[in-house]
Structures are given as structure tokens and as C-alpha cells.
Length: 68
Image: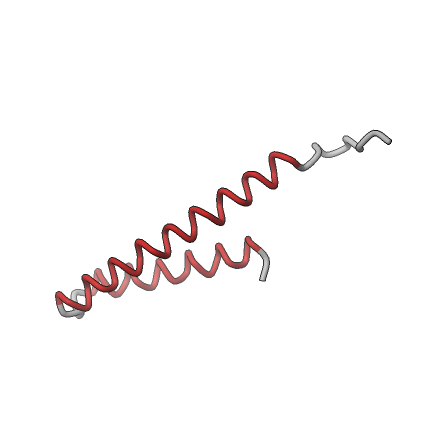
């Protein structure tokens, strides 16, 4: 799975969790656990974004070839 695909999956999981939290159907304990899970997912997403940004920073600009 590529970094972009993994990031998309993390975003989808966060969106599903947000829907569940907004529904009000979770018990307080379940909601607290869900919030902790969301924090972990957000950390993973931030790591993926940082890796993508670093990879992009080192990639040559379009039309710019490396010198031999």
C-alpha cells in the first residue's frame, strides 16, 4: 500500500469515527476509547503527511533532470 493510499485509509477511518461520535449512540466509555483511537490515527496521518512532504521536497522539479 502506498503512502497516499495509507493516508486515504486513515482519513476514512477518522471520518467514520467522527460519524460515530456525532451520532451520540456510544457510551461515554466507548466514546473515550474512540477519541483515544482517533488521536492515534491522527498521529499516523501526520507521520504519513510528513513522509510525503519530505519525499516531495527531494524530488526534482518537472523537467529538471539530474546531472551526470
